Length: 348
Ligand code: ADP
Image (tube, rainbow, N blue to C red; front, side, top):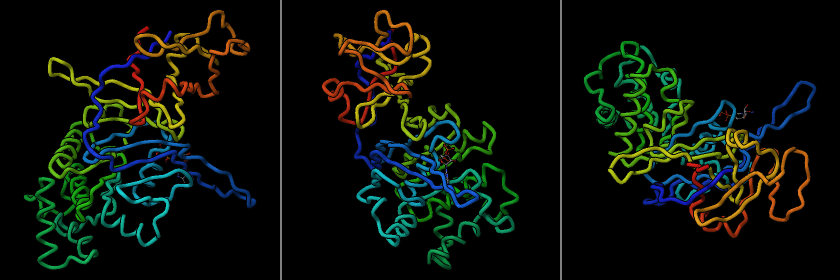
């Protein structure tokens, strides 16, 4: 028996949304030998909202669509379907030149291998000056801005060190400072600590958090590390190109906090049940959904023994192959106003 209860959950809803993705679809065509092509559905109807000033972590298995999401949000790839807004910009309908302008002025990128684009024999400050010069800031102006950026990432005293004389963590700080050069409102990071040891990774997360607070910078950080929840406001998990769950911090009455993982309803009111719960309760293909005073109860129908059996009760909801349950719209309305949310702190 699975019981979904309504609780007071401290979701970050104080600010306006900066990013709104609705039913986002991205299909890649892979051309094969012989002239045929296959389609890969990297994003399959993903809904997500990120508030201004929020620091969001995105986790998921390899191939689940995390980088594709970043590429769409960064204006590097166009959505195939659905909508992706950043501020007032609809990234699917911007002209090419407006998209170029968006990439240049609104977004900063940090990559796992970002420092490979930097030049080893240039000093830290010269490496920062180079892209500034390319974007039109030259001479004294470029030097002053480069020094400001070094200050932001705490590396002023390393300004004259060649890149190859800096540690991996310091090099990633330089890459972060370059991402901030054009004062973006959104920072996108793809595995920014992927090549760093745990201690150095912690210092990079601390820096990102500091920049998030000081600059009010919205951040979306892709990571394979589920422990990222400690460093960010909220973590979403992507599975098969869709949002599967969110982990949020919840304030406790004693002033402490803990993390709660929430299942996410999609825009059609569908909910993907965690596989381990289905296995625990031996739920196969169909479930019974009932309302109780505490919330919504999902359980295995009486006498349901085999996954192939057909049921007769009109109350039984048939789940699809991915165990998605469609919550009756009457029930889901109360929850879905902010695109969420059912609590996964399941009482049995
Ligand atoms: P993740 O970042 O979670 O590892 P990706 O977003 O990179 O996942 O990839 C999602 C799916 O899309 C994978 O099946 C991947 O092979 C495919 N994919 C990603 N980029 C491309 C591309 N440029 N062309 C074709 N397929 C791609």
